[in-house]
Image 1 (spheres, rainbow, N blue to C red):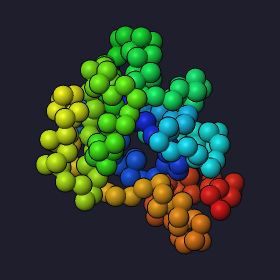
Image 2: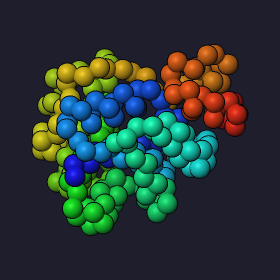
Image 3: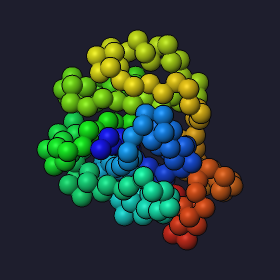
Image 4: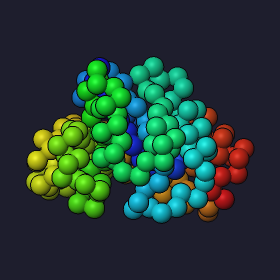
Length: 194
């Protein structure tokens, strides 16, 4: 099967994540999308909530989506670096062909990723454009070119971020239109991000 792995903090998962995943599934003709929340992001030292909450919110958000799966692999194994995850996934599931989803807003950070020169040889990126990003510049990025990344240019673009959701919660503003209803209920019930 062709599987696109969607890594990230998902802190919290929001409608932009789900929209991006659905477009990757359809436009890049994947069989499944595996949501793989990061244990820790070396570029973001603290998530402010437990892994348990992040995993549960993803579970709620994708529970009715047939081709979406949750993988707690990085959290369970306490893996910090994408390249390590990719190597283990390829060893564990040699029957699958893996791809890695990234937003175009992350392309400029690729030089900071651990062992990026090996990572771009191990797995192809699927790049989802973020509203406002200069896609001509993204295409010229040396890692994108060397990786022969798949760029989904003709898709719905959003600039919605988890940071925006968290800020609205802190400011006690309505955020119900940014996340799935089930995740909204979970955040309210557990008093997250306040």
